[in-house]
Amino acid sequence: MKQILTLDDYDFHGKTVLVRVDFNSPIDPESKRILEDARIRAHGETTIRELAEKGAKVVVLAHQGRPGEVDFTPLREHAEILGRILKRHVSYVDDLFGEKAKQRIEALGNGEILVLKNVRTYEKERKKAAPEEHAETEFVKALSPLADAFVNDAFAAAHRAHVSIVGFTPVLRSFAGRIMERELSALSKALETPEKPCTYILGGAKADDALRISKYVLNNEIADNILAGGVAGHLFLMAKGADLGEPNDKFLEKKELLQYVPGIKELTEQYPKEIKTPKDVAIDVDGKRKEIAVKNLPTDFPICDIGTETIREYRGIIKDSRSIVISGPLGIFENEEFAKGTKEILAAVADSEGFSLIGGGHTVAAVEQLGLKSKMGYVSTAGGALIEFLMGEKLPGVEALKASASKHQ
Ligand code: 3PG
Image 1 (cartoon, helix red, strand yellow):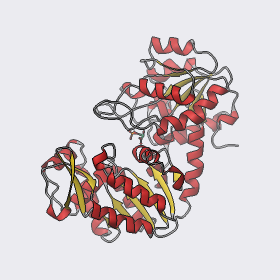
Image 2 (cartoon, protein in one colour):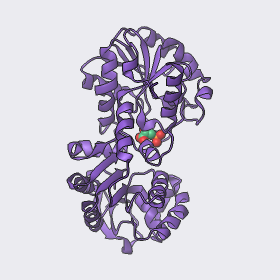
Image 3 (cartoon, helix red, strand yellow):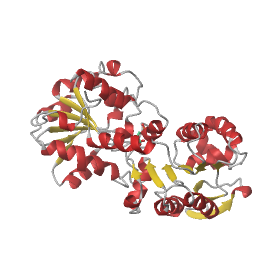
Image 4 (tube, protein in one colour):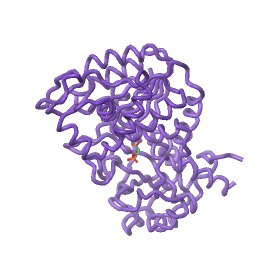
């Protein structure tokens, strides 16, 4: 018996299929336009194309950002990009499960693709609950009678027990899409005892993830080095007693990240040699990059990247590593002035002879933009989900697919 059913296990021709993908992409905060379409391309060129070519009526479910954040946008542009990638018409409806959405789903012909409104516009979407509870929501109750099957291709969001990830699996025959399938098999292989020395490079804004993964890989003797950067790097610096200055403190406070400092402090005291933090940083002085040594902090300007001295030190460690995991950019990569840290560290990872595993929506976008993908060991579409997976956690989205498979075989 198969643990998870895939697109090979069902005849999708003429069937209406709800496909949950992860289109969550970096967004320009000013124009609100998509900066990089790596994830849209990944799902488009595999699962969505395959289903459309098999003659399914494809209904795409996805999220972008989180309510209240600058990158919380509708999916109209995502649908346009998907259409360009697939070179076929992709329609969009600004409705998730109301009458408009239902009519458009019912009107779909074989091989047609419809993208629904951002699933996170539904206020209960992000509630963490069991599949059976989510199956009772108005969202699932409205859409499931119109569909024959559910495909979850969103490995990158499989760590979220959200309605659109697990809620359809108790009521619809459910399958893993090609990206979900590829990630699960590649990452299971990548997990098998990493070669030493092993270095984890942790950047990005999700500092809670950075703390949890650091703790796990250090306590389990998986990683020999942790290189901190990005917003996570700010917190690691604070944990070591640095005063970052008012704009940075305010930023961390607003993002509710200061709560992680005590945990990081404990960890940095336990592993002083293994955890490396920036020696210098780049600050934003009226839109221009200026570097200062950490010992000269605090600053009245926002810290936006790691500095040249830090890049040099990190590059040396990367060069000597036999396996490398990198998740999250080291600075504000979207802004050319502050892209240097991410670019140079990714270039060092690409040049290294060790096996490299890259994750995180923004990191993957940076790898694509720099044309480094072919030089990396494995590039995952996931960030948070990858971290959970690396920590041996069960992913609710994957567990839900397993439960459905055992029911439908
Ligand atoms: C990601 O980018 O890691 C996924 O899309 C999940 O996003 P989330 O952390 O907002 O749930």
